Length: 126
Image 1 (tube, one colour):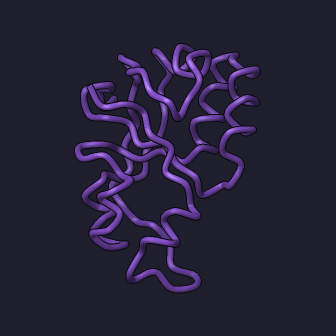
Image 2 (cartoon, helix red, strand yellow; image 1 turned 90 degrees about the horizontal axis):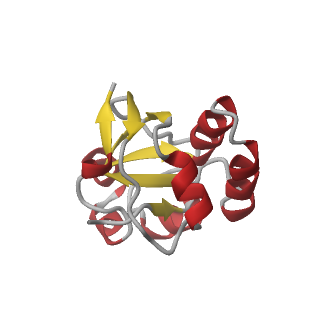
């Protein structure tokens, strides 16, 4: 099973081929409920466990991201994933009463444009 992957803005900026100042991401928004949380090195187990059952707004898919920013992003954005901004995940954790985990996530990824790529077998669209 693919792992949850943090996709950092600085990595996107390094790998993109078409971004320009002021360029924004656009994709198909969808609310998802996280139903499985795979192991991985990007997020501590405490945060992964806290995400189980949480609903999060995602802004797009790996395909949309790669189409916007270039094929080199396929090296950091797992195939078949949906992307959620860290701020949206932190907000969902706070709403679920998991403030300690939300604060931990801020320490790990503090840029508002950082994202988490959620593998397709870990969620349902709600």
